Image (cartoon, rainbow, N blue to C red; front, side, top):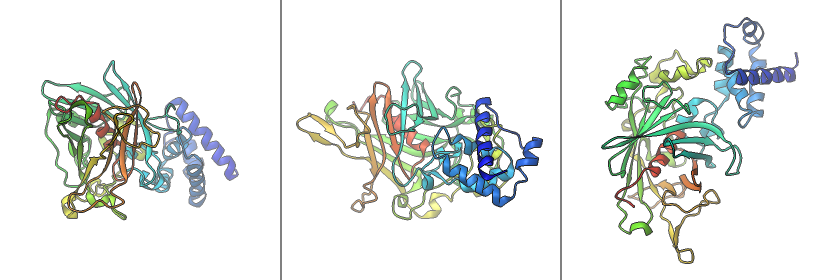
Length: 386
């Protein structure tokens, strides 16, 4: 069988996987005899060609299907597929927890459903503002007497706190001026879990004591009082607890998890590449305290007043088309030294393009999950800021 025919056959198998909603089990006799025993050199060449040719969704499903064939395919596929920082691609579910590309901005968009207070995040597949996109995350707003939660999930329909698809949450105070982003798994070794009722619900799905599921605070967002009333733009600040300030400088490094929490494995039962028998502690970065570095602080870029338009303006380079108080651009903040060229780079920008459609573009060192949670805070009503 030629290399070309092998690739075509695997693409055909991946299409059947997607259509049927299942992946071939590693115990399948055909898989073991025909695919698992392929010479390593040939297998690597096949997988490298598939990964190189299927660069965008939905064709990238072929790469995911390859990782579900058997253990040897899984190991080589994970080795070949690079993190979003390097490749600029979101391939596996773990990609949403890994920092985005250093350049350019990764383009996404958010759809809002007002009827059920749900928000859906999609990866943009084209430069158009109206493409269908690849679904990434969903969030549902849950109002309480003294606070509001946004529950974030890998599944568009299953948005409960005790679900195995739970990724994390965003919680606001009563005034909607202060928010905390909670990750469903520890961002680094030594991370402290926050005890709450939702933590107990999440722990009902606990599988591994080495990788405890729960609520780990990874960022704090605050909005300042708007003394200019409706004419003034919002002022926001994000303190990224798990990301060092040096991450935005050349050569800087941000925590990059390599596995999803084991409590989320049930979402993908046919893809064993999410499971790992290795020590979970080795999959986590060192705590920020041991790095002797300050936390990364993000501040919104100050807009300028346009006399002719009589409004505050920011240059979104065509990615935002409707003026809104929700629009913002975040850059790294340094209070002790003048901002460097790297710190002037936009790390996250968010803006309105339709009645219930918003763009979300981000880059290293924040992840898709963190960027989505920060943008959700802009949707919340700010009693003291508007």
